Amino acid sequence: MSKDYLVGDVVTGKVTGIQPYGAFVSLDEDTQGLVHISEITYGYVKEVGEFLTVGQEVEVKVLEVDEVAGKISLSIRELQEKPVAPKKDERPRKSLQARVDEHDEEGFNTLKEKLADWIKQSVQ
Image: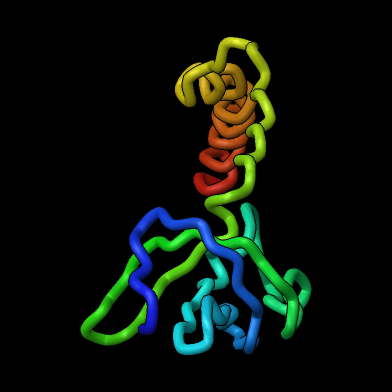
């Protein structure tokens, strides 16, 4: 690594390679880092190539620097605005037991009636 990169640094780099697990980004002439597939964007990424292309300039945030191994972990997602989660209905939720109790009588009454028929049939 010709330059010292610190965790939290935001730098511009160029995509130099795409693999199924992520994209390699050149930060300078001697330094390259990896944007893991999970750090490309929010949501599910099936194919890295759908989001990035070789030669594309991207802004990345340094997540981790391993000087011993000479590896830098990068993120594009960290620089994006987190999508707002859709709000769930404000209706009060019924407990599982309350939902089971609503339908209990229907199912068990039918079985209760059939049980009497089955007993009569088995005795005959």
